[in-house]
Image (cartoon, rainbow, N blue to C red; front, top):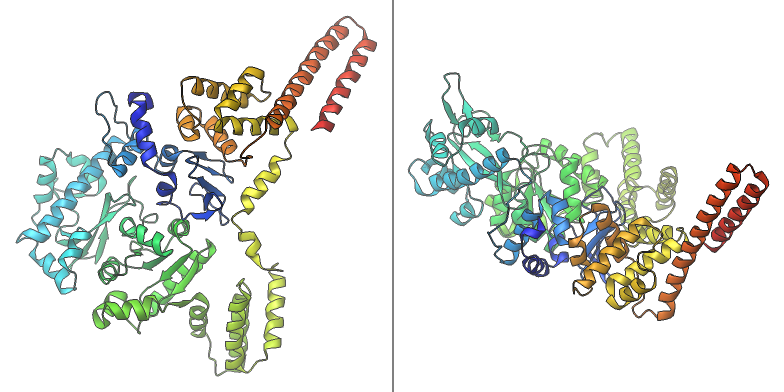
Length: 604
């Protein structure tokens, strides 16, 4: 695919999109030395093993092994074709791709592409009906009565679905969409008389966008007495509500900036909060928080503020969501609202400043919420219930790594229930021992651990294999070293994959390219080789390596080659001796082979 677009254009697009900036839109990256680290988006992990280097413009995960450049990342992350990844990056950087000779392949099925296009047209239609037509006036008035400004109506592209039975179907038909596809996708409803109507007829519309800002579904709310109150689009290849968070596309830059996300239960809460100046806001889509959504948030942030309704159902949902977020490694804070209020009501009653200062910024710890939550199950006037309550709180406190936080709540228990701190501390110690927690977990959370373990395991490789990897690492960053290696040993590497990399690298430099790992990776077609090159390129190297050290690597590789050649020759001689019925000579040769192998083992 890449050869259909001029190489200089591909290079221009790649260089215009810094890999740390692009990946930073998907993963919370933290600076560590010369690289950035974060949680890998390609496999589940709680300790970061995903590394990005700006200097080389590549990424590599030391956990699952995936790696490559900025184009590779998007192809993996979004299931993009090469052309889609390049188009995305070109649009992002304001570069126009040439049209001629380019086959616009897509990772989506033709049907899904059509449905996506239909959603785009309907978003515009519904919004236009709401803002500018008599038919949409009741929807417009609903939002205005709810305190939603025209700016917010435009920002969230809120809309209204016409009540006229064939209106939407006729509109889409004129745009070239087939009725069968629209019915199958759930945009239109087929009736027994074979007529069709808009699924969302008479409802105000909340477009549901993916993280790229594309509408992939609608949420429709009744403003009359229709049932159900809320109605979502059918699930499809494009839309799985357990994997999507409402407003994530607009909120993600504010989430990255604040390292905190505020999670709501409903569309209106998000829109009201966004309008009130709290921009890092998202919501689930009418369902409880899922593990997939929790993991998505963990990639972006350390802390999630839960701001659910303050009624009984909201409190239960808060407890379940908090535990799920903590399981995936998030810090959780709980925003407190006045009894019975939801966030939207609170903002209308007390205003944006109060919501910011007294709810979001004043949100409390999970532990303080848990202690309140637990009390509802006990009659604390009874001695037995008080003891059981304290025991349960201690069990939860034992899971907290911070000794300062543990002591804070232990003092609270001590004062409230007249218990000695010594007794409580001893109980916590016993709980932690029973849980297998003997010391602070901070060491486990060090960002360097995964990489350190990786490089430690690398030392277990045979000396010649380490020498080949290290030599290739230097070849990737210095053409003169590559020229020397080509002259000295050519393709005589002992590992087949290393031979392939060296051969490609010789050709790459001979074409006049300077050292550029990201560009070199672009030229490779085999995914396994790409990942191996990325892994090798991420290994630490000496800035100004001496000729003597390069010569040492070459010597080790040659010695292995010679030894292996000797063993091969001896094995041939051994087979001949066996064929000639000369067991004594065959045994002598076998002893020679064993001796060489023993020397090799000692050397390695």
